Length: 477
Image (cartoon, rainbow, N blue to C red; front, top):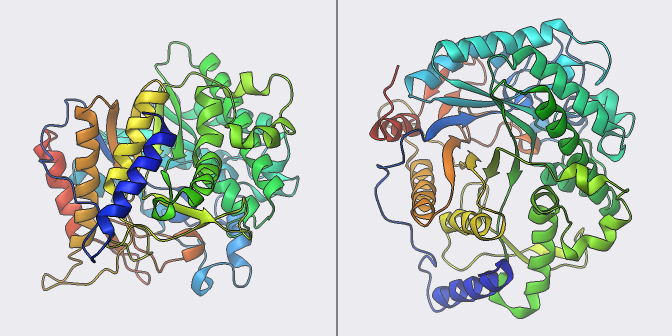
């Protein structure tokens, strides 16, 4: 069943299920979290600016998020990533936390401005030294390093040249990718190019809510295309350089089903447009070599001969970040004439007011299976913000977060039974961290971080996740 037909049918079903009462519209999945296949990869994901801190140490250059977070009113409570979780100095402690839970993979991002303070040119040896030490620490605890080359912290020096609106950045990114891989590639075998390029473009170059704070529909689309181009250049360059080294190359996309609010036909075009912008503007050219028809004319004006051939690259895995569906309706003030509306009545919400819809993950996995060749998928982000309360044990007893993760894992497990090619689960996230424009008021971590002392305290969800990993045959260290 194609996405368009599925969306209309499923949204209508959800709407009917919610009529006439306040009960939850979509039931939580049932089943056991045992029985994931041998070799299934369990771990976690983080990003450099959200946890590292040390923004002015050892030669690191400023990023767009350094400037953005220090601008008045951009981030809740005036928070910045200057200290973050001090992972730069406490990485060994954090690696130990992963190992004690039995995690076998860690997707971390490399801070481009820590390696190349100007974005190009001279390499900062001390910056690469940090990731060298981190990689060795991970391998010493039997944890696979999964470097992600870009997770939103673009060097400010490159933004001053236009950032993702300047086509030249495709070559700069490729050069940077080769620099990092030359240092870590003898030990790190799994490489993600970008994290959520559509989100960078929408919130950073379209709505101006994230760094660098640029606005406009055209800027948004240009940032999408340029990131797609940079990703393709880097994939091709690393594949050429990695012959015989056993590298697995891929990228990470945020994929969230877009549903018409209320299942109404009048809202269906808005849901399709937002699906095209958020999901398919990055997924389709990578896998199929075309842009979605809703945006084909817009991207034609930005695409030069050979661009789509460069963007369409073979990948060894696709990282999928999933949190919830997006419920859309027409909005003349919206960047693309669309806006968010309410999910079906009775749908649970997180503390960020995001709908809790585990079956949306199964929907995405089914779509990848049916329409995109069923690529090897790793769930590279899934998690939730809740108001953490300390229980009688003296630590956070986060039952809502446990329920959220459990239900999404069960949804993925059911999709795997139906043929989805899911290879691993990297929970978002290890530590309560700097949550972009939300600052430190949001908590996604399995581990609480004291903002004054930086002390780490595992939550109940940490122990629960360790138990899930053990149930699936992975011994703790």
